[in-house]
Length: 177
Image (cartoon, rainbow, N blue to C red; front, side, top):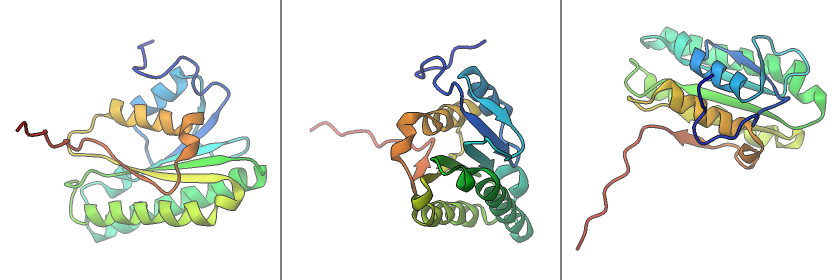
């Protein structure tokens, strides 16, 4: 087992998480190493869903954009209607967006997933379901995605809903006077 940087052992112990859309293997491995039960179906007792739009989006284009967004909604609706809302307890949805240069309409995909996260965070607040979106950067590694997803799935991530998390953005250097 590889150590998971900055996250405590068994951070996700007892959590049941569904993955959809082709979430990277490294993300799945990290969630398992932190104690989560990971599955591909949203059936109860699933407490969270992680959807990756990148595989459906592929190299981009209008049709691939439609497929990625239709896939997101199908996965979210299935998880919400079969597991998250009926549980009458808190739940989480995390949307993973393609990087900005993934192809034509990549920014549209990113914006649409962000809008979906923001809208659902308001609509589903009454059910205790939080929805966030992770926007990969061009050089974002699967490990960086895994670390953020694990954090958002933890108790510490309960405080975020309707948020867009940017990964791989350079912070401007401070100028000395």
